[in-house]
Image (cartoon, rainbow, N blue to C red):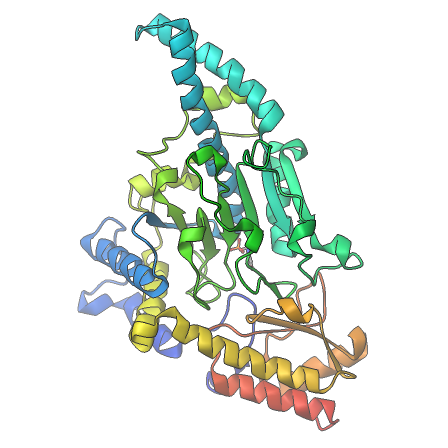
Amino acid sequence: MPTRQEVAYFGAGPAPLPTHVLEAGAKAFVNFNDTGLGLGEISHRSSTANEILAQTKGDLSTLLDIPDNYEILFLQGGGSGEFSAVVQNLVAVWVERRRRKAEAEIRQTLSRGDGEEDKARVEEVVVKRLQKEVEEELKLDYVVTGSWSLKAAQEATRLVGAKYVNIAVDARTANHGKFGIIPPEDTWSLTPTRKQGGKGSAFVYYCDNETVDGVEFPAFPKSLEPQGHENPEDERLIVADMSSNFLSRKVDVSKFAVIFGGAQKNIGIAGITIVIVRKDLLPPQTASPPPSVLQKLNIGGLPGPIILDWATTAKNNSLYNTLPIFNLWIAGQVVAHLVKTFGDARISGQEEIANRKAALLYEALDKYPNVYQVVPHKSVRSRMNVCFRVYGGDADKEKEFLAGAEKRLLQGLKGHRSVGGIRASNYNAVPLENVQRLVEYLEDYAKGQI
Ligand SMILES: Cc1ncc(COP(=O)(O)O)c(C=O)c1O
């Protein structure tokens, strides 16, 4: 029976967590801070729960330098839940901005007052105009660079219909049908903004790190840089899925409308999803459109489920319904530890370590090009999910490689079932020693010494 120290686990998520957090968690699960109750038992409305929530939010803000004009939300439903939530919430923002404008203009032209009949007549005309705008102008831009952004785009299509979804780029088309590159940005066909002579899109979506395919954006895409705008309608709202590289590098949060990610890679255990959303996309600045208006617009199933509604979650300080406080506490402990460990360097301290560990792995792989072939192009190699083939994907050799790794208790190395191959996930809680053990195995296997 191997001990925890003996196993080096490289699973892609759920993923390793710091042992000290798990040990403290085991205690807190049974008897939190000598209260006689476990964290899975206390009310999510208790003062203890509220303190955990406030502390975790504060530490996340510190660690990631999250500006004051952003709200941090904790939800359930995982990254996949947010694939739907992004559509539900940002299409609602798109509609509401136009609804307000239409209402103001129509009120003037119809010279209507505030009586019930006046309101109903105005709403009727507003809805007609919105129906036309939805039909002719609603677009959701997706940058598809791997399996997860593809899934997000598929969910958007399922919800609202293909007609409204613009696949600005599908990286497979430029790479023999497979993910593994990020095509040059001048080949992307984003919906033109109003400044560019178009009508703009409700948002532009991308996945910062593609867990299955080992593709990571090396930096924020240049073409998505904010361009200075006087009118909110001219702005591109950028959404990023950071499920698998959250807390692994410095991010300029101010460039994003929304960042989201499930906890179960770098942050904690499954069951908590973190959403960082710009406050002006929430009430009071942007209220949700009245459900009666959305229903008449016939945009897929909108309005969607209330538990995915960011405005409701924000209004209730993430406690609209029962939040798993134990899972939140685990995430909070991981974040607090990073804050304490890296001090003023904040997340850049962790970034340095992540980069160093990834470099060790890629160096070892590149040393034996006849034995190992890294899947993604060099320019977009993920620092979190190192995907490679053994002898060009020879099934027997890859089996042999995995069996040899298993003998050394190097586990969780099998590639995602959809793509095969080998994947070593290098999340924050994977210690340098474990990476070194894997490097040693890579060397030994390449030299035939297993
Ligand atoms: C980048 C990315 N996005 C989304 C998801 C989906 O997350 P969940 O399983 O929490 O729905 C994953 C899961 O591995 C992921 O890696």
